[in-house]
Image (cartoon, rainbow, N blue to C red; front, side, top):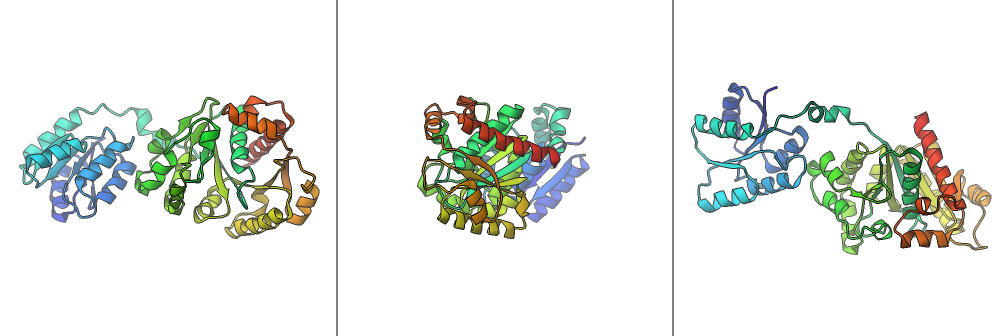
Length: 387
């Protein structure tokens, strides 16, 4: 198979002439007329070498090179800067930004070809497994968990459901907290101050490759893989990056058999985009009249996204022992929606699990509440099997 060369240049004549010349030499050519487009093509098409102009209006070649080097998919792809900038400082900047070679325009075609051959000769041939990765990608079972308001235990249930699924199957399970600025799982599971979600949301959609998402997952001692949200309140503005959220979830689904998404509370724009992509949706509720009323509205709005109400599973989470809590039959009647599972109060067990940074289903698997959590996992496994 011929080597693929990506040419990134805002000069249409350069794209056409250089592309035609290299095509005649037997190379496969793909082209981009801006830095942003160049990044997108590099991440998706994975060229063997990138021929990169420096002076472009939207994003110069130095910045393009830096971003290419930060991404696992292109960190080792040879970059040949091909530009009219001839000063020594310009060349130094090019090499510091990650370029492997530097040529000034105009140059003789023979010289350009020699530099390209030299760079390509350093590349180890791709294995059949690497070439076939994209075709072998499968999509896992994605579970979106949320509640009508905060403080109902969505994060705790998400981490324990992920743990129960891992215990039952010993398959890859990813727990992803998608609430920047409101993260709690990092501290609860002993991995605070993680920037994985922030890094993905702060970049462009083109930069969110499968390899990059995989590299940002945190391995937990339980066996779970974690994508964690920042605890810093100032990061909440990242919830507006709806397009990035969609790509992140799509990439996560190719990395594990199960992906449990902690979507937090309410129905922000990113949750509206993500929920229809999920294999199932779990709404967490408590036995309080005001919460029941708000949850009823939430379920109506989720259904308005085109999601079958039968796929919306409601879990009644009794976090604290209280006589004021409404029983599950009354909750179900007031809600007008069936309750898929009920969790009995176990505040001491949950507090102990936080102290040792481990979901309760791992630390106390025989506890009655843990068994109820395993039941939710079993219901998910049955739905996955039926699907």
